[in-house]
Each structure stands twice: as C-alpha cells, then as structure tokens.
Length: 269
Image (tube, rainbow, N blue to C red; front, side, top):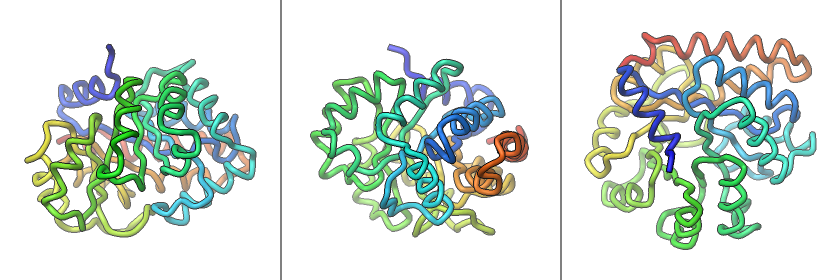
C-alpha cells in the first residue's frame, strides 16, 4: 500500500532538506477560497498539507487559528464539508493530507466511522490534539483498521519517560511543539529545540517535525538544521486573515509567503 507521508520524507531526505508542512484551516474563509488556498500552498512548495478541522473550542490554537475556524464555521463548514474539501484537493493533488483535529469531533462520530470516512475521502493521517496515547487504544485500533496513520505530540514539558509511549502510538511522524502555550506567530524561537528533537529520535525511527510559532524563513532555517520537517501555520493563515473577502489577494499573498518560507536555503538540513 502506498504511503504518501513516508514517500514525502524519502523525497525530502534525498534532496537533503526538511519537509515543509503547511497548515490551513479547512473552509477558511469559505469553501471555494479554501480549495484555492490549498492549491496555492501545494503548488508553492508544501510537501504535506495539514488541514485544521474547524471547531468551536480549539484549545491548542492561538487567536489567528481561532478566528480562521470561526470564519469557516460561520460560512457553514461542517464535518461532512471538510471531507468534501479533501476530495476537492484530491482532484488536483496527491500531496499527503493530515487532519489537525480535536477528539470531541472524532468521539461524536466514533473513531471507527471517523477513520473510515477520513480515509475514504483521501486523508492520510490524524493528529488528534487532545487525545493522550494512554487513552487512545480504541482510536488507534480504528485508524490501523482503515490504514490511517497517526500523529502524536511531544511538548517542551513532556517528561522523558513518556517519550516511548508517544512514539509507539505514532505511525506517521512525531510532532514536537516548540513552545508552551498555543499556536501563533512569534518574533523569536524557543530554546532547546535541537536537543529535544535528539531526545525524541532516541525512541523512534519516524520523522520528527517541529511546529508552533515557526513564523519566518529564518525560523524555518533554524529548525531545518535538526528536524525532519517544519510546520508553519499562523504565518500562512494570516495571509487569509488580511484579505478575507479578496480571493485574488489571498492566493497572491499565499504564494508570496510560501516562496519566502520554502526557499531551498531555508529548508536545507
């Protein structure tokens, strides 16, 4: 069975660079524009597309992504429409797609039904923010049954003794949250990212990506020195927030932002 996520990391390693993971909130600011935004970031260099599933109580998200979810929900985005968006992206791209979601949304449908629907639509992996691996046995079984990969998070505050548990529950890549708190653009990088990536890698052969607060090409360049992948979210989403009613301006801004963030010298490992 083809593994789009693994193939993406094989490709970027062969090119001696980090994998670029671009985050967008599904349906922001509306369905049509969201599809165009996905196309813009993919065609501008995203190796993996991380799609935030809009939720009314996104506890891990800062203001930028909270407002993106609000715009999507106000325009009528639903769980079913998110899957329609994935299908629309699959009409023009085979890029790996990871759902960034909250367990309430999964639990409401049941892990088996959620995993089945996501896989059938073309999703490759689920990152369920607030589901600890200690409580994920049924969810992991459902994902495995559908051939859907999983992503779990390591935080700066995660004790070393929990790293094996988190790594063993993960089948796609381990996501290291570079700082405490929520998502959002930051002026400076957190300390100790390289050492934490090294600590995680002692427990897994899977790729380790770093996100939360990665906002500039310089940040990308710093993270790419130690991590297998770099996640940028709020800095990309802000391109939509700045032009929420201007379709052409959104796509232009996204392409310019991606060009700055995805430069080969920024991603070189």
